[in-house]
Image (cartoon, rainbow, N blue to C red; front, side, top):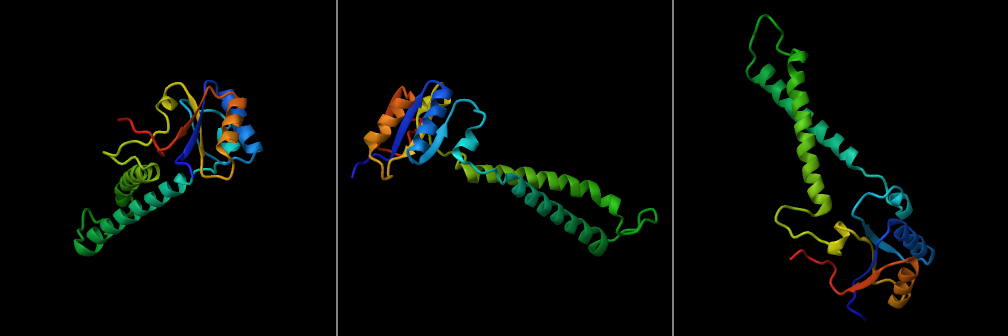
Length: 178
């Protein structure tokens, strides 16, 4: 068994890369991921990527933050240390709104930062995982997991027919910046 873990097809043009994706899918070659230096319209649909669920996570973090601060303020101002200020009732809802709003936004922001770090594995101090250094500069890269049933020579031929300027067989899963 070969030590190749990834087969990378490097393209100069996004249209040729999209043509390469079509050819690979037509030949039932599973694509691991695609790396581009700029956003390409319609690539998510072509690769079958589902819509992000980050909005649900943000909503949950916001609800959690709002509930926590509302509970703290309610307990503090109504049960633990009730004060009669200007004859207002202890449980005056308009007084609770600014704290609840601010904490909702704060918890949503921090929760989304932690969710981003978890989802992308980009924790501070960690070496970034990069397939090819030129993918962030001027190349469009299609990464194919080499552990499939299709021979590597056939994948190389398909990528070259689609217009790949270079096909690399990586024996390591990722190339590091160092």
